[in-house]
Amino acid sequence: MKFHKPLFAKIPAVCALLFLALPALAAKQTGWVLEKSTLTYHVVHPLHHVEGVSHAARGKAVCSNGECSFLIAVPVKSFASGDTNRDLHMLQITRGAQFPMVVVRTQVPEAALKSSTIHANLVIQFAGHTADFKQVPFHLTTHGDHMRVKGNIPATLTDFKIPAPELLFVPIKNQIPVSVNMIWREVK
Amino acid sequence: MNGKSTKLVGVLATLAVWLLTVAPLGAQSRGATLSGTVTGAGSAVAHAMVTVESLITGESKTTETDAAGRYTVPDLAPGKYRVSVSAAGFNKQTVTVTLSAGLTHTENFQLASALSLQSLGFSKSQTQSNSKEQALLNKRSHMLQIHQKLGLITAIPMIATLVAATQAGGRHGSPTGRDVHMALGAATAGLYWATAYYAIFAPRVPGVKTRGPIRFHEAMAWIHGPGMILTPILGILAEQQRNKGKRVHGMAKYHGLVAIITASAFGLALVSVSKPGWIPGLEHHVAALFPFHHRDILNAARRSQASKAGGATAEGRK
Image (cartoon, rainbow over all chains, first blue to last red; front, side, top):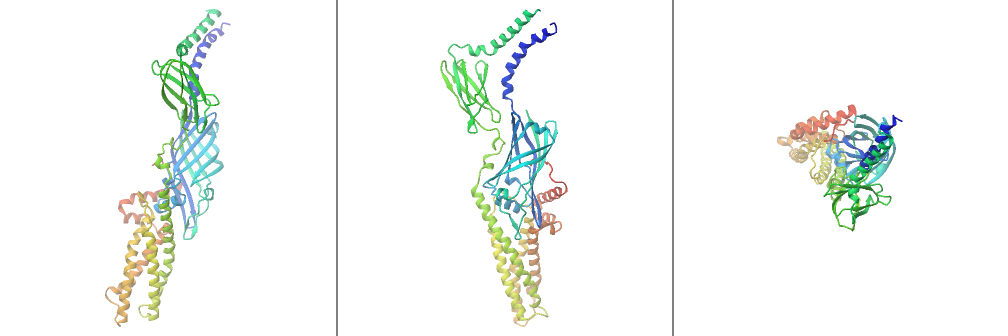
C-alpha cells in the first residue's frame, strides 16, 4: 500500500481544484471568427463571363456540445464586377436595397472541422428568399489555429426567384455559382 | 504518515476549501435571495451559468439554470452584486443589483444570440431595408433597359441612313436617294434623342462612383451627342446648296465626315457595354480619357485578368 499513499493524499486537493474550476469550464465557449474572405459570383452570358467579387463578408461560429453553428453575412452592395452600371443593375434585380445582406447559416459537427473535406447543409437568405443547399463540399486546410475553407456554392437564379437579366435581348444563364475562399481563426 | 493521518489531512483540506469559498456566502442568518429566468431567442435557456459576485467582498457564487431557464441563489449577504450570465451560443450579459436582507430579488435575463448580424459588427444602416433606394434603383434600371433597347433599334436606321447616303450625294446622287436618305436620317435622329432621354433622365444613385466600361460608353456620348445635332444641320445646308444648283461648299461639305464620326462613336458606345473585350485595351482608353480615376479602372482590369488566370484567392478585406 506504500505506493498508493501519495495518490490518496492528492485526491482531496484534486477534488477541490475540480470544484473550483468546474463553473469556469462549463461557461467556456469555443468558436471561429472569419478573418479574410473572397466571395466571387460567376454570371455567364453568350457575350460575357462576369465575375463579381466581395471581400466584405463577416462570419462567426459558436461551438457547443460537439456542434458548430456558423453565421456568415455579406452586403449585396459589396460585390464589384468592375462596372458600376452592371453592379447597380445586379443590386436592383436582386432587390439589394430592400434585402441588403446575403446571410448564410450552417451547422457542422466540431469533429468534422478536423478533416480535409466537409459536406455542409447551407441555408442562404438572399434577395428576400431562403434556399437550402444540401451537402455542399468544402475543402479545409488547417494551419495552427487558422483554417482555410474553399468551395463552390451551386446557386441559381431560380433558387432565389431572381428574374434573369438580359443583354441585347438575351438573358444570362440560370447558374450563378459562387466561389468561396475564406480564412477562419479559432477562438478559445 | 500512516493511513489515518492521510485521511485526516484530506478531510481537512476539503473542509478548508469549503470554508474559504462557500461558507462565507452562506453564513448570513437573514440572507437575501436572487432568482429569475434566462431566456434567449424566444425560449428558456437551460444550463446557463449565473455568477453572482459581491462588489463589497469580491466573493462569488455560481449556479446553473434548470430546463425552464430558472435559477436561484439563496443566502446572499445584503449589498451590491454583479450578476453575469453566460450560455453557449449567446452573448454574455452582466448587470448590477442591490440585495436587501430577507428579500428575494428577481432578475430576468434575455440573452442576445451570439450569432446575429449585429454580433458580426454590421451597422444598422448596413442591414436595414431601404425601400426608397430600391424604388430609385427600379426606376433607374427600367429607364436604362429602355435606353438599351432603343439604342439597338436606333442602330438600324442609322446604318440604313449611311448606306442610303451613297444614293444621296456625289455622282450617283438622285432626288429620290436624297429623300430616302433624309427620311432615314430623320427617323434616326428621332430614335436617337428618345434613346438619349432615357439615359439622361435615369436617376443617379448617390455616392456611387462610376467605374468600368460604362465610363467609355458615357464618354462616347460627348462625341455622338453633338454629332447628332451637327449632322442634320449640315445635311440641311448641303440640301439647300444643292437645290440652288450650287456645289456643296463651306461647312456643309463636312456633313458626311461628321456623320461617319457620329455613327462610329455611337457604334463604339454600343459595343463598349455589350462586349467590352471587342475593343482591345478598352480599360486603358478609358483611363486616358479619365486620368483621375485611371487607377480604379486599371485595378478592375487587373482583377478581371487575375480571376481569369487563377480563380478566387483570398486577398483580404478591402
